[in-house]
Length: 399
Image (tube, rainbow, N blue to C red; front, side, top):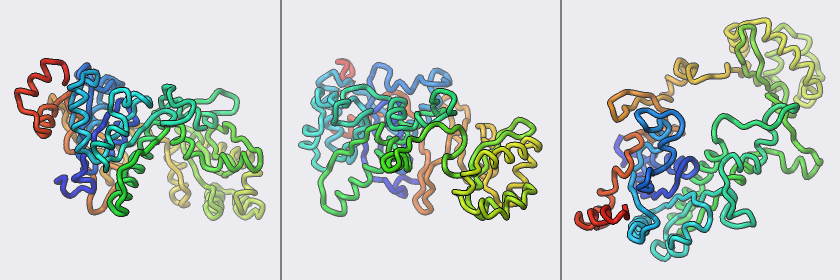
């Protein structure tokens, strides 16, 4: 699909980000047609290029996280490198950065300077604690945001210390808020005649915003949510159970009608008809009893039988998927959640499909994460730098 058919075609986005939060924010924009120009240090570039599993020296994660982006190199410690970046931002619609607050200001690339060059600029600033407040100068990764935002405290089992999810979810949540904020700021500018503005996303606040009823329950009732393992506190039954063949099945039967169907399907018509279990409050009061009988029912059957019975009864359920399960699953395949791509040496590989799905202007993968500085010359030429000046900048270490 041509970029012109994508919803963000025509937008120029400059990324001054590394690792996860900033780059994931711009990845979303690039997937839907924005021209994303990623500025990297000439000295190795984004560290994500070397994170996790490497293929021929480059991270497979990098090829996904930087898909559809252009890579340019600029030495921000060099005045000519900074001037290049400033000129680049002067022609951009959006700037996404995840430096520690104050760093860009010291480089002469703070909001006031950039706004003077480009009054319509939308500047997305992702940081651990935001641009203001007593913690703003402290470093903060996603793990810190997850801890301060409340997620880690409630994750795990009550008799063990808090645990993390297996991905950097705090960074990814912040990236999504950043993308949403940028599009809202653009909407304001384009429809209401407003100017550009700063979108200030703190990682801890991004997580905090997802914490459901945690705040009002504590404020009104003095109730502090604690770790509850795999159950959903206050909502019963919703849990993960182990089958006879050692597999794990998640069952969400917390709707009133669903619970009745579930109990009927497992031969407990008495519980299906029990008026004290007709609503969630009654079921939650007998949580241990209900989970005990579901555990026993699952433990007496293999995964395939459990899932078949629950599917027949229209009870929401799923195996706990590994990557291999996903590759073989007809739902993933039917909705094209795997895209085929080719590594630089010609080897084919699969990467995640594009989310969300737009019916008329869907996103796509045009190319995988680029080589370091692959587009530097083209971008400099587009800004009016002549070839001899580009060569001089390279020779001087500015790019």
